[in-house]
Image (cartoon, helix red, strand yellow):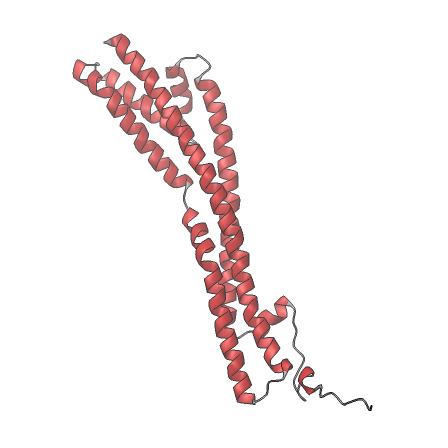
Length: 243
C-alpha cells in the first residue's frame, strides 16, 4: 500500500506571516490593546498587593515584639505613674496608646480632686476611652486589608475578562482572514490566556495573605482587649481602696 500524503498546511504559518514569540513578554507585546491594558492593571495590582503583604508582615511582627516588651515593663511591679511618664513621651504602638489613654483619664480625674461622683463614673470613662483608642489603633493596623480582599475575590475575573476579549478578537481575525490555520488561531488564544494566568497570580497570594493577616490581626486585637481588661481591673482595685 502506497503511503498517503498528509496535508500539513494547518501546522505551518501562512506565507508572509511572521513567526510569533510565545514567551510571556512576547505574548504581552503582541496582545490587543485592551488585553494589554488589563494585564498592565493586573501587574500593578500584584505589585501593590505584595507591598501591602510585606508591610503587614513587618508591622505585625514589630507590634507583637513591642507588646512583649511593654507587658514585661507593665507587670514588672514598678510604678504605673513612672511607666506612664516614660512611655507617654513617644507612643509608638496600640498597646502603649491604650495604656496612655487609660492613665491619662485616671490622672485627670485625680487632678480634679477625685470627687465621689467622679470616682463613681471614672471606671466607665476609662474603659470607654481605652475601647475608643483600641478601635482607632486597630483601624490603622487593618488599613489596606480591603485591597487584599478585593484582589483575592476579583482579580481572577478581571483576568478572565481579558481572556474573553482576546478570544473574541482571535475569532474576529479568523473570520476576517477566512483561515483556521493553527498559526492564526494560537497566538491570539495564548495572549488571551496569559491574562487569566496573571489574574490567578494576583488572586491566589492575595487570598492566602488576607486569611493569614486577618487571623494575626484578630489575635492582636484580642491581646489588646485582654490587656485593657487587666488594666481596668487594676484601676478598679485602686478605686475600691479610695472608696
